[in-house]
Image 1: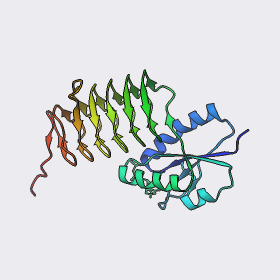
Image 2: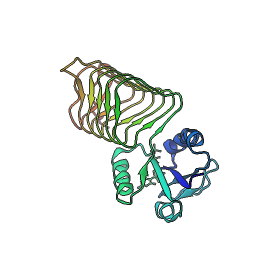
Image 3: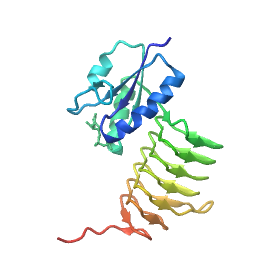
Image 4: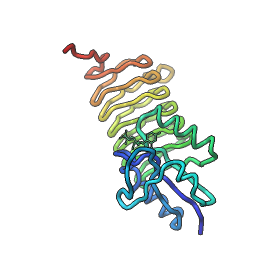
Length: 220
Ligand code: UDP
């Protein structure tokens, strides 16, 4: 019997999707664990039957071990929350759905969150606090930076490098790179939903369409 308090940080849309995945994992590994949401907004619990604690309330709980998965899609917020957890000595809780496929030679850094039907194939390096939403895949020889976010059904083909804080929108397709010549999605870049990316995307750029091009805000 353990005395561990598990938490999903963020009780909005994404957090509510992650909680049942996290619950399944906890029930298998630690059936006596207790599970809550943490949220600093003005959400009132319970949500879907789970208590919502503010972060100070969570810290105040008397459990001997505390583990947290950060289910907040915004990568800057995710980084800030992760830094706070680390500074307070709270462990990160890696969560992955029970039908996720992870093949050979996949290295993870801390805080990974893999939603149902995600596949990571072979020889992939993944940074801190990676989110892969439902039905996404990452193929061979990809390198994913820190705080990268995949919306649902992202197709990340082989030899793609994605730098820190990039956001890849729903259904985007990233063309395969080549050994020694990867397709690169730059730091903080945003790939719009449904985009088909055939060329490198510079840091901070926003690209949309097929083939993906820089987004130009329509004049009003
Ligand atoms: N949030 C928080 N602490 C923070 C920043 C955000 O608890 O420092 C919560 C916020 O109150 C909200 C959730 O994180 O409930 C983010 O939800 P949002 O709908 O913006 O996006 P999601 O990540 O669910 O797609």
